Length: 402
Image (tube, rainbow, N blue to C red):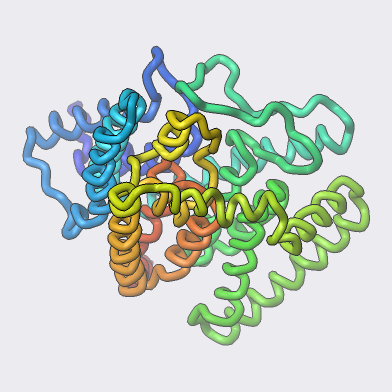
């Protein structure tokens, strides 16, 4: 008996699983090479073999990679101003490889599958986060979530310990855990899988990530006041939201560690003008005015802000939000072109009924440095490829079948 495998379904499944696990795989290396690069190149070879080189790209998918192309070109300016260009060359090679891998993955992935496999990953991570919380409450040694038998890629860091009540789960930082859950919460709400959304919201709370909590507030406002639902559906969601608040209130009053975590999160939200938050929101933007005219226009290259000032014996770090870093790395030209790019992305999201994904993406760009990271591409995928019309069509086909 000959086993028949649908090639399209096979590629859709493989690419969707890959997109769902990339944020978890990103820190690790296989045989000294990035795990994402290794599996990405393997997937591209698989595509070439299965399609016999006849690769058809989705409409407009090339346009989604205009920003990486622009920043690649602008980064060439760094070759003329840096005394040591090794790191810049490595960054450019990495940007090129990641962009090609994402192009292939996005071309074949299906968002329903990405959400499905993402949910599986999210539940695994949530279970581990709950176990971490249990260890904190009981005073046990808290596992950091690192996969011990795997090595890191060069430069990767990990939380040394899970302090307070900030669960990082299987991610290197609590905020990365929150970033992974936010688009899945929205996706599950879109698919009317509200229980999943509520359960994943628990993961956001356990992470104690300011970014994640702001994201949850935005999503709650969207669900209650903006999202187009039947009045009965909206009342049901308001009821679930109020019920979740009551459960949260009960837990806060009965678990001291959870209460301390919540109080600290509220303090962080209230103290947005603190020095730490100022560094995240404003960063080293004042150093932009230390550039000469050419550097102001075109920047110093991707991830080269720190290296540029290091050669002048000035110690700074590549730490700020993505908007400030766009100025510092790619200059005025890069910033203006990125604004046009995100306006285009926003219009795509609006036309597909995915504007809430775009709002979350912009919020994260405004408070953290994620551009061109694997977390960034994960968020961007949902923003670009969720299509409300397709979801309605799928639901109608299921009703017709039943």
